[in-house]
Image (tube, rainbow, N blue to C red):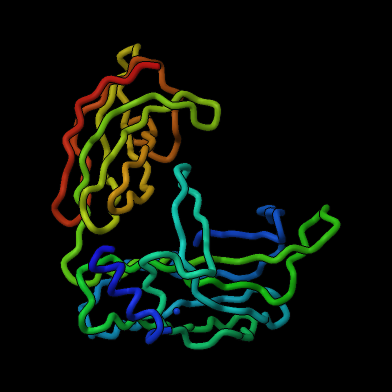
Length: 275
């Protein structure tokens, strides 16, 4: 058992804490279902020292004409290979939720008046360097009625929280490339390995040229790469000056440049992609 796992096992008894997820049993709530809550920000990336208490605030805005009743709790989460999130009410191995406290577990929000919901994280004094990850879950107490569905389903919003405790950082390196079919389209993919002790994301643009010699700008997806994992990161091609509109790629595609990660990290890329 690692030092961190043993530490968390001993501490668990003493310390008891926007991806949209909607489900009722095995059913998934359609995007058009009525869930009248806006949450800001959708993600927190915080830092703390052992024995230091960190407090933050979520702003919850209920937009229905009636007051909204909500339940709140924490959850652990894992990231699937496709980038979707699995939430867990049970404490996962290495969970830091015993360090977390939330303001309250039930809440009524008046329409038009944002509610500032407080939570805090208090790593114990002997915490080793680690990245703490959890989610604040907000669930409507009244089922959300989805148009055209015979039953009402429960809707939840999960706000992801990262807390860097001590000296933690990602270390990203290129582990390979491929062309994978994503959403029915061949897509260039970077295989990125994280040998650090915190999550990381790629940022920036690469220069690209397709089979016709057309100049492209290529951006890496901002999917997080967790410590200790290798993740496939899709590349999206756009026309120079129009980074909002993806274009179909005529292979082979050549890309070059540098992508940034973390505070000072960077990754030089010089690759050719072909199905």
